[in-house]
Image 1 (cartoon, helix red, strand yellow):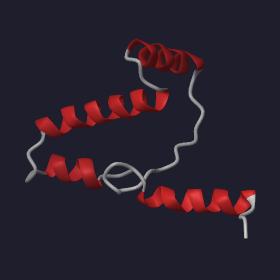
Image 2 (image 1 turned 90 degrees about the vertical axis):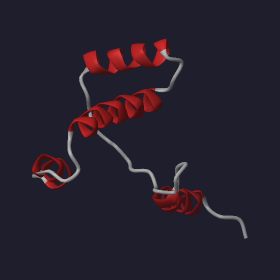
Image 3 (image 1 turned 180 degrees about the vertical axis):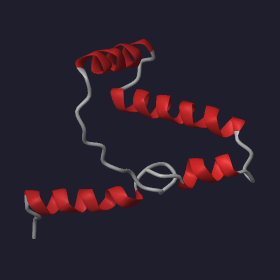
Length: 86
């Protein structure tokens, strides 16, 4: 029997938990940002021939990598970065 639209959508959402190239899943990010930031993101994405999602992921990953390179894994700053207050 064919699935309803709601059933297909529910199945798609359930697959998100293990989606992605490493099977670690994807997370939904739903928020409002300033028009200035959105326009800048669009310009950056256009400049690098990427989608807004790809550009945002790239910017976040590079900022995180820069921090991790400066931290010693056996240090308190490392622990605070990963387990500090949210």
